[in-house]
Image (cartoon, rainbow, N blue to C red):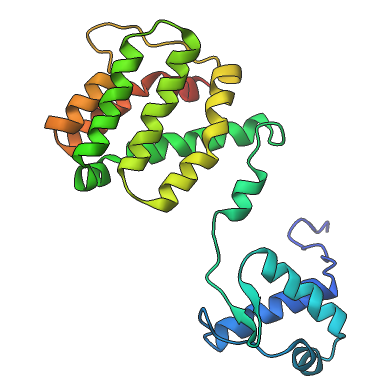
Length: 233
């Protein structure tokens, strides 16, 4: 009788530093460490785990890179509040990422903009709306392709700023290389400016006088060509 071995998992080689890192993660969770809490010294951790101080230092360095641990003068090593986007900011570069990753990030941007409406209606300000209208006016008064692209990016960037959420704004800046990818690689056809066309002016007026639900529908129509491109593959 033949026996299938497909379900047998291969042995994964894990380095000592990897094991220490996992052990420290469990320790921090179990002991309920919070930002500002001091963690034991490297020598004490090494003794407790039965490993070298060098190995402990290697694992600690990983936590520091992620912003989970920081060293403070006179205090020692403490748990910090990690910056969840800092490492993403370092690696998102259209020259480093492949097409599949860039397209998935673009899809993430579409999802984000579709869900932005409710927050915009809660936090829109007169000054923010004025800046948005100024950008729309500039866009409508030019036929230069580079300027049109510039104002397109500017309009959507100002929507994120209008949300008054620093994390959302930073995430949008991380996604800026996606604009370049979309224009150079996806080759999304421009929308036909017929009666169904939703321009930045229409979005602006909906944000002024409409409802979050109306804005969401208008935004989907505004981005329709991108959704169609994703659908066709």
